[in-house]
Length: 435
Ligand SMILES: Cc1cc2nc3c(=O)[nH]c(=O)nc-3n(C[C@H](O)[C@H](O)[C@H](O)COP(=O)(O)O)c2cc1C
Image (cartoon, rainbow, N blue to C red; front, side, top):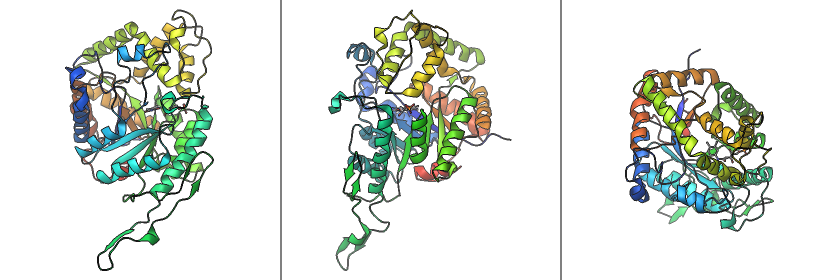
């Protein structure tokens, strides 16, 4: 068996001041507002023929850690951050092939504006828009949602939500714009339909006020829990996942594919991309040194990592003793993360120990070495998993580390026939379905 050619995506996470306080980020504290680093990222990743960039979002400044804004503000924890749909439009404007997938939460918008925004991205870019569906955390006080919205209920709502959005995208038949000058008809009313969607949680009459000319834009999702995986397998064209070993990745992908098939879909239409954070060096020793530096960083920044974890789970770790064993945790937020964390905490480990292990886990896939070594490992991993690719994310994103991926790792992957050397399609959906 030879390793399949695989897809590459990029997970653009956290603040617009990426990697604040990390080396090689220059004057990012002054330059962040015009998003120049993100523009460089998009153009460089397009040069490397990435399928897409997924722009993460949470929408608010987290108060989960210490029940206060202080920690997030002082440490630049996902703040300041541009609104992702507006940022996506900027990135689509300066690129021509790469997809830009925008995170828009079901808590934050009604389905109608989401259908409109993503269809507009798709139209403005010739078919490169995409929507990352997230249900968000349990409460959203900025939206006036103060009551806890239980995890599985949020997914039930989201099922309905996606149906409403896709029906809006389908509300114009192909060829509805007839532009018949002789009879003075621009749009044929016979080809544009109300959707009359009457769900339990959402209603929309439709039609959308513009056609999805390139068909349905791409849907991405990151469902880790069984309910989340079912949701992803039902709706998503690309599923993004965070796993710690090739064996777990294989189980996850097989599960998504089986669920997709059970839902009457072709499993090959669902591309599963796995989070990866390679550490590259000019030599093995160089990479090992940089890995050690990352490790040292967590030991002095444990609170920062726990605050990030608090953000996605709503659990206030600041109220717990760092040096006491971790008690059973429950969340209505990111359940897969908590489940993994409890594995790190097993055997009476303290919060500090479990947090360090959680951080170290980021490099559990062992993608540390020279570009050639890491490319080999990625190939071997995909061979074991069966596909479909990686979603690169770097905790220290800078022009330097972007170059390491684009001009170091990717050419090594390309030489091995593992990564695309050119785009053969213009639309994101076709790019994803190419192999
Ligand atoms: C790669 C990846 C990206 C994600 N991006 C976001 C995001 O931008 N915004 C958000 O609210 N949640 C995001 N999530 C969380 C997921 O949408 C989802 O809530 C989470 O995976 C928990 O799913 P589960 O409760 O089904 O395990 C992301 C998760 C992963 C693994």
